[in-house]
Image (cartoon, rainbow, N blue to C red; front, side):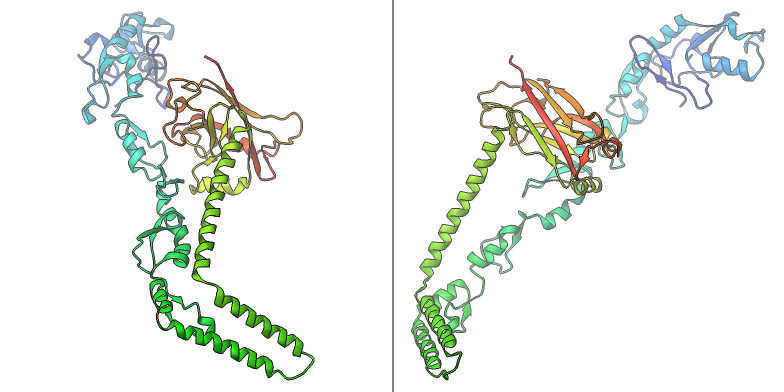
Length: 481
């Protein structure tokens, strides 16, 4: 197949792509029906591309006739009449006629696309044809048709971003197995094969220590000489059985032995020290005798209650803290170099700021930053997006979100006048990103895939990265409708 038409403005004008040698040839498209022979170039035998007419009345593609004139003899290829370049004129009538001839999609024969339309709209169609081949937007290296792209990106691409169902952290699918091997919330089997079943990895140690029925424990009277070991149930039966009378005898014998040892201490400079040590040991052991399992249970209940109270207070503090920003925040991304390298290696896909409100009442939102970029900004830019979140005042504010958001990457302590990088987002009510969130954080964000280039970010003449930190300012202006 030869050159293709390039239609930058298909409804008004038509231009043609240029071959590497600088020439043009006719259109090798599937016309429906085939154009009349008068529109065929006698040189390339294809439909005229940028038709030109000579003074002797013959039509040629512009590229074809010019190549003949400049590389061959200056004569008309049809009647061999002498011909100068200034005797060749654009045939605008033929050009308009040809641009309206109907052609089939180039993907018809191979993939079965049924589109038929004017030649001048062919490029516009090809840019959206479901059967057209495009590279995977995630840069996984595959070429696929547009109709296959969504399923590939959502379900098959090894570089797609997925959310761990156990800890809600977003990771690249390709390294998900590595994440799962260290995910703190991933369910694992108890090593003791107890009846509890699967347990989150971070809770396994506590389960083994505090509640696993199959954990092997030592008798609580081990300090007095009892060497019995068994499960919690076996320990309880052991201590409640007739053998418990032996525990009392063990305690009495231990105390007698210690007192006897105390009495047998020879007088010396260290006698008082030894006596104090023995007295303290006796006192400690007597306290252990009085300590019961009920006391342990009471302490565990109190600890659990305090732990839950701390979690509730932390949640309340985060919610209250989000309200004090009033739509204007400064987000300091520390340890930037390490996070930047993790993003480049694919280990960390995105960073999210702390949540903040635009007011009280107001909208709750956060900022997402992809340090290695996405889409057209991948590997070359930082990408930055705004995500609306479910908030306490969603039933009191207007939806979709109305207003504008100013994103700024601060130039910190750079010489001369600071050159902050600033972009303004205006809300578009038809986009899902500005609708009322149906989950904790709206999956759709809105922002810039090319917020700042990596080259500009790392420039020695500016201070975008200062003390291994990047400073982002966000200003939200809510408009009244």
